[in-house]
Amino acid sequence: MNNRVVKLALIVTFLIVISSLSFIFSIQWGAVKLSFSEILNCFGGHCGSAINESILWQVRIPRALMGFCVGAGLACCGAVLQIATRNPLADPYLFGIVAGAGLGVVAATLFFPHIPLQLVPFAAFAGAISAVLLVIALARYFFRVEMILLAGVAIAFMFGAITQLLLYIGEPFASNRIIFWLMGSLSSANFSQLAVILPLLFSALIIVLLSHRHLDALMLDDDTAQTLGINVALFRMGLLLGSALITAVIVAFCGGIGFVGLMLPHIVRFLIGGTSARLLIGCFFFGGIFLMWVDVLARQILPGQEVPIGIITSATGSVFFIGLMLQSKRKLG
Image (cartoon, rainbow, N blue to C red; front, top):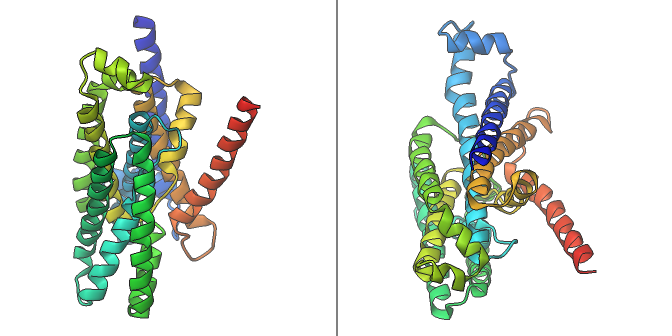
């Protein structure tokens, strides 16, 4: 037992170091490159110029922190959903959350054309939660684990179709803005958004880690979990709703960033093991590190412009998904 605790502590220490280095590297890169010495001077309150100080504290630092939180949140939600549904392909975006958020934004922009930009995330949040509640209602009606993902896919297609109709009949400029938002970006990150997402993320992670024995039992089968005194239906619904709420907040602030919740749990299982505690801690750090580096890549691929993060994660995720299918075929064959 002590050996396992020491090993986990070493892993966490290593991940904290890598996260810190990734954070420093992330805030260096952008349209204006900041040297390591300039960053240290700014942290010490002696920035070389007011422009560098503004870039660092108003743009780079909140963006890097938001990237870590979004990656950590999506990866942990993906791990929880894969445990709750016992489906290795479960992902937060299969629950129609992105489609619901997109519908909320499109509807708000179309019916309230002069809506302030500050209220757009609330419209996205309302749409995302509507999709989640519909998925959970359908899952409770069928009362079968395998139907949860199918319900999510159905809701995603339905909300997506309504969104496309509204975009087609809507004002062209507003439609273009919404389409870019749906691709996912950290460009609007600020400390007020972090004040919302950080407490939510850490509270959810602590609650789930305290329930790691329940999660381990749920990974086996429902009968084993019930034998241990777990109310499986209530526990599973709590996991689904909690994951959906975190994902909805992320989508409301940053748009659609897909496949992170699918890829990272598999990578973490391969690297540090599959028990729920290790999986969640690993997803928290690996997810945050991954998305910070993706954001750096998004700012550097094309000179003078930024590539939406969702494009990069979707391209990476599609290749990863094909790799999973090939691996499954080799195991079966």
